[in-house]
Length: 209
Image 1: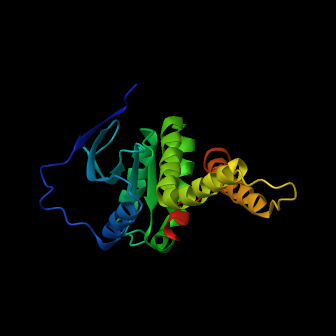
Image 2: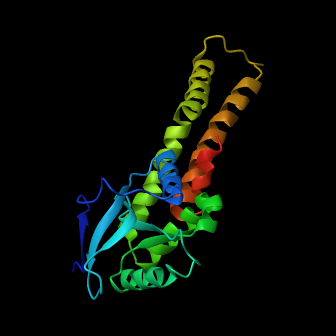
């Protein structure tokens, strides 16, 4: 049963000015090819306010992100706590980011998105997040891995079908070629296992190539 209603905020979009922290998160989402919407309007149950504005909504994974930029400034702490309480009561999956988290945002986002989706039992969203990481890995590595894999495979087939076979032929080249193929298959399998089974392949890895 749907327990909240979400509406795009259009009435004050022209007057909204993101903070530096929010701009930082926007750059983070863009860099990692994560689709996002800003200032998502939510009408929630048992909420003293008529609506809430979430800083970000990530439609790919159906999860929200709030940046508590004024945390520990006393003025906003109570508002933040109330917002978290209302989100929790309405089972809104949300990642909360604090100013001190920005320096390690790759680690924080990766850790908390898995925790939140697992906590709210959003298995479909967690699967989509894993698929997203696998697709990113394939995109970043497809040309390089294909070159090594198919190049080695073609060379191996050529050597095996060559008419210049000799009884005392040295198979060093074939052994090296097979080793290259095995290494590439191992790397692909290792990434797949890390993402889908161990759930340990970090988002940060995509930013070091």
